[in-house]
Image 1: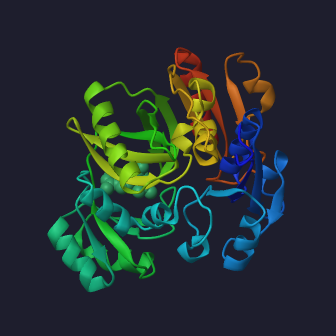
Image 2: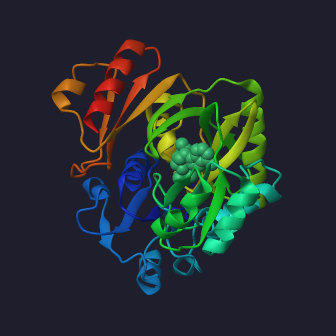
Length: 359
Ligand code: AMP
């Protein structure tokens, strides 16, 4: 290794994604330092420097103490990201944090999306309802995650209430897709242009929150289609790091829903299920190390929403991997996940029912 190799990675944010990046860093000889708040869960495994992520000067001062900077959330003001040695780059993050830019970019890449229109007023919403048709979903352009900032509209007379509920924020209206399945594809791109792909994963959401990811979603044509789409996005954005794109599957085709310019919840299964986890490959890419192989085995990941099941109960299953993020229990909050080898069907179904009851 040359002396210029990246050693110190600064993560903007100190939640569970930063925690799992920090866990993956040690075997690579890398160090992770997080910018966050006291008590953030990544503090269990990595130093957390108190930084207000809305304060450009404070973020720049933090960035000066590390070799490269990465993010665990795309909801950071683009102005704060300017001028940082940031991977993925600020352009990619800027597109991913705005649903209108994101959908427009997908379209420019030739990637299919649900019909959508920009909405900045009630009059525009009414026009969009007329042109797109119902049912449709009104989504805020920014700060939407886990189903937040979304209102479903089924009848034209519901438009005014939806506009009020969303608080008049800049939005898009999106046609509701009667999808056969929701899937995501994760890929990592290195600075030298090398790209590795993971298998497609099937995702199940409830109340807008990811509950289950099942890998792989076996479909040769859709795997090839999704890989082609991600290659376009990665190359156009000169992207370095892990990228996740969520798709709706409809009649043997894919409609892109959104992208995450970071490691993603639907890739947590790769810790135990792949030769190289998404966390290790993200670190490898941004640190200028060669990417690792993504050979994978069937794996299921169940999110723990609200509370963790007792450790004594999960420990009774020798082939269950428990990831407790060490966060306080709170309804609707992702506090951990469980990973199973895919062949343990009966145990998985039992735990799925159990976690559903607990949320
Ligand atoms: P999002 O925040 O855009 O990922 O939306 C959260 C979840 O809402 C998705 O995973 C889908 O289950 C559902 N959803 C979002 N957009 C649509 C759509 N256009 N049609 C149908 N379901 C959707």
